[in-house]
Each structure stands twice: as structure tokens, then as C-alpha cells.
Length: 215
Image (cartoon, rainbow, N blue to C red):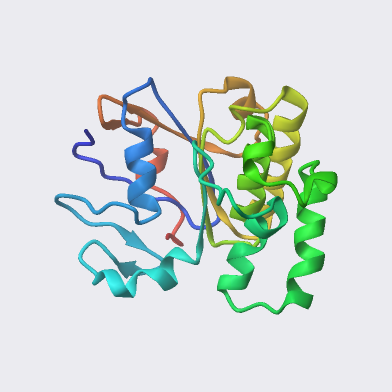
């Protein structure tokens, strides 16, 4: 259970969310990507107070958020290509606008030859990469990733981290929940949010005093 959280994320920042199992990392991510509402307090994203916003008003905000789920949440009857293409199609992109970016993204995550494969035929690591490609294909303003490298080898983890940092350089705010110390140490300029027993442990004060521009 989360309690007494009070922090802000600098717009365009890169943050690692860490802490022991059960500390509340997934619950905090759900608040950030608007899957849950706080029982008290406020959540402000993109300059809007969304804690008590009508549910029907939330989809446009959710389309500005890319999410990498720990359990992938791919659509089983769609191919890898169609899973990755989904955010573009929902946003109204034509098939001509979809083809090139999706092929390029699948190649980036090492799945160019698996574009027509459906999730049940993919390994856990391959499904993870499809999920990441889907989350970033639309260049979201906020990217939230829950243990995004947990099912891939070290080489692919570094490749995916490079993808996240490239997206961050384009202006996307990135929040990655992970236990991977190597991943954290390899990311220059990233800040760390540590949760313990549902509360933010913030000895440096950096998270409470970010730069002026905020989500």
C-alpha cells in the first residue's frame, strides 16, 4: 500500500523506480499511467489535475503515455506487427504511415523476422520486446516501464536501454521500474526514486526540488 507520497517528475527526465518486492512500485506506476486513482491526494499529469476527472475524459491523456507491462499484455490473436501497430492505428494513422515505422521498430528490437508471429509462438523475451516496441512506437510524452528487461539477455537489455535514452533525448519523460543495478549505473543523468514500505525514500531531496518544468 502506498502512503504519503509527495514528489514531482521533471518534464523530460529519466527516472529509475527501485525498491524491494512489495514496496509499491507497480501500484505507483498504475497511478502514473492512469489505471488507478488515488484514494486521497492528487495526481497531476500534462498540466492537468486528473485524480477526479471523469473516466470518459481520460483516453486522450492515456494515448500520450506508453506503457510496458510486466506481463506484456499483447493481443494473442494479432501478429507482432499488428500489436506494435495498434497505437498508431488507434491514433488514426493510415496503413502507409504505419508500415515503415513498425518495420523499423521491430528491426530495432531484433524481431524483423518475427513480424507475422503471434504472441503464443514467441518466447518470453520476444514478447517483452514486442511490448516495448508497442509502447514507444508513438513517441509518447511519458513512458512507464515495469521491469522492461526482466526477460531479455544483457546485450538486448543494453539495446533496449539505448532505445529508452534515445526517446528521452527527444523529450519523453521516462520512468523505469527495475531491480537491475547494472541498468541504473549505465544511464548517465538518470535519477532514482526508491520505495520502501509504500513510501518514497529520498535522502538527497532531488525529487522534491526538480527543475521548473514538470509533468
